[in-house]
Amino acid sequence: MDCLENSERFFINGQWVSPSAQDQQDIINPATEEPCGRLALAHAQDVNRAVEVAHAAFETWSTTTRAQRLEVLGRIPSIYQRRAEEMSQAISLEMGAPITLARESQTPAGLAHIEETLDALRHYQFEECEDDILITHEPIGVAGLITPWNWPMNQIACKVMPALAAGCTVVLKPSEIAPLSAIIFTEILHEAGVPAGVYNMVQGNGPVAGEALASHPLVNVVSFTGSTQAGIAVAQAAAPTVKRVLQELGGKSANIIFPDTDFADAVERGAQECFGNSGQSCDAPTRMLVPHDLMEKAMDIAAKVANSLRVGNPADSMTELGPVVSASQFNRIQALIEKGTAQGAILAAGGAGRPDGLAQGYYVRPTVFGHVTSDMVIAQEEIFGPVLSIMGYADEDDAIRLANSTPYGLAAYVQSGSMERARRVARKLRAGTVTLNGAAWTVKAPFGGYGLSGNGRECSRFGIAEFLETKAIVGYGADSKKH
Image (cartoon, rainbow, N blue to C red):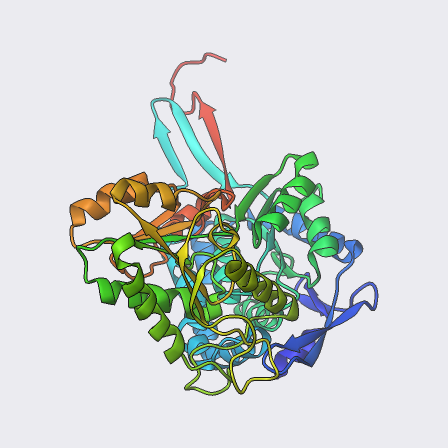
């Protein structure tokens, strides 16, 4: 794969450069557990070099006009589309996404954010007058962006594009677990003519490169997506320099299914969405809430979905679920499945261990637990694997109480034949995004969470706003000579 040529280098000031030290790690193919390349790991001095370059470039990029930024960034979509198959192959190789999922969802998600950010930039209101006050929104400075492995292009595009659109300069640290797609994205931006120093990329791990980026005094905003534990570490590293910190963290999203909907269809859709991407989505509907008297029916339907899924080689176009991303993720998921059984949840499908016939690779059996109660670990902790917990409720108020009974609040889902009820319940859910009756995913909606799911919002004009400072110039429109 061509992108492997740059896996042992960083992109700083418009060129691929050698790291300051020779620390490297293997890039592991999760389908085989074997190395597929080598990755250079940045030290603090590499991060410092990238930040200083971005800081110097900010003086010019921050003064560009909307039209100038649109001209540069507008060249990205066509190059991205030309390299879409290469991007899909990289994502499939590095994090185990089935190639069909990579082609139909993973890679297109990045393009959707690119195009939506360009549209938002065309219409963004950077200045407005109120009486004699000019309210102007100006780029905040150098943006340090730390992105995850589970939806690599989705998260890279929805951070990098809004930051650049706002007039910020960027240092990106992608996940060291899935670094290949970030290399291709960097090559795309370079080909598009993003000026030297405006966009920079260093590879590395969180405790070294991530900490150096978050704590750097010349970084003005850090945007992080990942686990809540890692997000706390980023915020602590950033705190002494009082920089803005944006966090999109974990989730334990509830999917409330009311009996006045097409119950079988809603359960089937909910299970499919939970298992998608091998359960490695922060907003996956991992807690299914159903009436107590429909528990057995829901377990049966969800189990049939789990048992029907084709788990296997990501390179096979017929594969529906690939492996989870790493040995550590695999082991954590296995431990939580065993914990669910030990605490009394009823196993309806799947369970511990690999699927039959898959002795190698980080494959997890799609698992369904029923009769889960809110005091169980699997009802509270983000598993980040293909594990569905079905919980029973007594009535509407009880369903809302259960949905809000975790410290997370990233997403929630409501299925009801009554739109009035769906809307009423949605308003009572403590979550950043509530999706009603299977509405389609959209990059136009702001994305972010309540509580331990983080702060700040991504996507479209909401994403651009997070990379801007607000300045009030008082007396701007006044004719008086008052000082």
